Image (cartoon, rainbow over all chains, first blue to last red; front, side):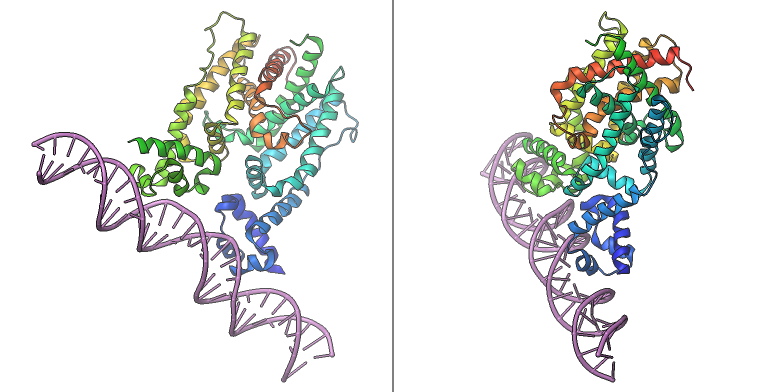
Length: 205
Length: 205
DNA sequence: GCCTGTTTGAAACAGGTGTTTGATGTCTAG
DNA sequence: CTAGACATCAAACACCTGTTTCAAACAGGC
């Protein structure tokens, strides 16, 4: 059963690097030091292997830093929002260099059926927790859609540092990386906080 | 020479749908009503065809609504920012359903050499124009990095509606689409304007 | 030691890929 | 009319893909 795990690890690297289609089982088996037939023996076919790799990658990702929950620390909502954003930005930018992150990025750009199971258990909790925090920060009660857009704005400002990295790299360097997490978190949280306060006092068109 | 253009059009559709690797020249030639050898006859090889398709797609994209330049209309900077963001959001969300947009999205997620030539002539002007507008909106002079982060935040808030659409679709519907462009532009411009004003009055950590 | 189920191995298979070939048609200049 | 360039076509080529086959090696229980 050791070769099964070897194949799983090797497949993670190969799929992260080349994607599902372009990643070959021969490459995987070579890296795992196994025979070509091993993939079909243990996983049935290539597609099934991929599904298991996604699960494997998710388990690896989940074992990292846990999400800071509202109320877990006795701080004001504003600084908690900054803490949460810092956690999210770190998660995003840390992913950039790992196989797990590159795999997830591929899944986000071109989702496969394998993602569906994880999405409900991964994306939704993150989003609803962020909603709670933003609502706590806001001086007035935010409607559902209004709240949603604020959260999307925050997510978007963080995600762009990875999903738009191919664009950003083509501007004048230096590019933003993991070391800039704090600065990015500062900026995004300031933007978000000022947005909810501004929208609370001004009349929205 | 008509078949050359037919192949170009067909290849745009095939590459947008399946990507460079998974898109086959046989599929392209079938759609174009041409022989398999036509691709190599007119374009040398598949990679070269892809490069020309990227150029072709860019020309199609450029012939759409032009970017609203600062000073072209006699309006205050704030409403001009909203106008610019609306233009950008529309461009982003309109792309979602067209072959050109899907191709560009693929290129952004996994850039090929073909993108390099376009990037300098497409991304940079957009970004520098946005920088000018944000600077005009701001009550105080913004430093290079500060200005850059504001612009990235705006870009990110718009881009997320496409790059993160696979995530957003998994939240409770209805999802945001082209018809919500105005609302999104309102929200993003309000956020951006309040951010530059807030950061101008508060002391940034 | 032997037997049984599990695991590995080299080779082959069937199908699809981009590309090349050489013949055939088509049109235009001399 | 003819020569030559251009364009199209069916067929074949060489290669790579995931998958299967079947024999050999290995494991542990009796």
